[in-house]
Length: 217
Length: 208
Image (tube, rainbow over all chains, first blue to last red; front, side):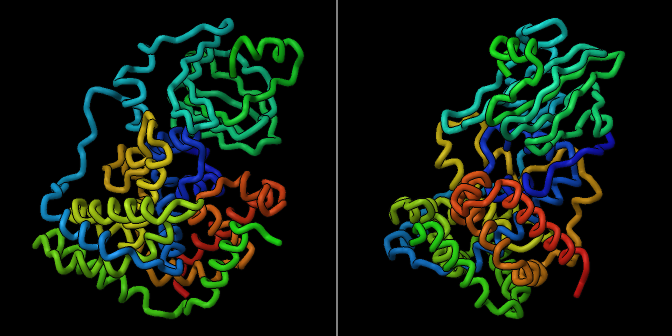
C-alpha cells in the first residue's frame, strides 16, 4: 500500500493536542493505523506536547494525593505486554470495534441515491461531528460540494480521482474549507470511504442541494 | 482587558521564553528513563516516588485547564501516575523521551474524562503502546529526536506560534475556538500550527 495523500500538519497538531472533534480523530486514528509517515508526524507533535508540559509552572499536589497514590501502587496490576491486535478482521484497528468486527460489506448499508449508500457510525454526545461510511458506485461522480466545515475522507477500498490526483486505499483527503472538488470513482470497483464532517457539507448545484437533506451528508 | 484564558496563554508563553533552552534536558530524560526501568524491573517504589515528585506539579497544572477544580485535577494526576506504574514495562526508550510518553498518558486520560460516554476511548485511538498494523520506515525515531532537540525546537518557535500551541496543548482549545479567541482567521491559526510543525520537524532532522 503506497499512501500519497497525508494529513495536514495543522490536523496532526490538533490530534496530538487532543483538540480534534471525536469524529475527526477517529478518522485520523484509522489513517494512522495505515500510515507510518503520519504516525511519525504525530509522534513529533507529541514530543512537542511533552516539552510544552515541561514548561508549565507547577502546582504542588496535596500530601493526601501523594500518599494515596503511593499506597495504591501496591495493589495495581502491571501491564507487561502490549495488547495484541485482534484477529479476524482486515480493517484498521480503530474501525474494528466501531463495526463490532464486521467487514465493510456486511454492515447495514442504507441506500440514499443510485450508486450511493451510507452507514452511520456512533460518536459520543460531546462530539459536534458526524461519522459515517460512504459507498459510491464504480464510475460515479460525487455531487460537487464546497466544504462548509471541517471534513476528513479516508479511502478504505477502491479509488477516486479529482483535481488533486488519485486517492486510493489509505489516502486521506484533508482539505481546506474553501477547496472545491469533484471526485469520480474509478471504473471497475466501488469506493468505500470513512468520512467525518463537523458541519454538514453544502452542495453547490440546486438539484444536489435539494437532495442534501435526503442524503443526509 | 483580556479574558483569563488569554492571560494564562500569555503567561505560559512568557514562562517558556524565560526557560533556558540549554538546560540539560537530555540528562534529565536519561535519569527518568532509569527510574522507569527500575519500576518495570524491580517494582521500585522509591523510583516511583521520585518520578511522582518530578512530574506531578506540572501534571496538576496541565489537568487544571478550563477551570477544572483542584480535586478533579488531582484525581487525574493520580490516574496518570498509576498508569505510569502499571505501564512502566511498556515504555519503549526508542520511542523518545519519558516526558512524551507521560504527556500522551495524561492527554488521553484528560480527553476520556471529557468524553466519558465515548464509543471509542481516546486511549484506544492514540495508543502509544499498541503495535501498529504496518511498520512504516518513517516510524523509527532517529537519535536526533531526543529531549534536548525538542526543547531547542520549542525555544526557537516564535512567540505568536507558541501562543497557539499553548492554547491547544495546554488549554485544550480547538483551532476554530483559538481563532475566535484571538480574533484571527482560522487560516492564520492553522498556518501558525503548520509553521511550528515545520520548524519542529527541521530541528529533529538536522543537528545544529
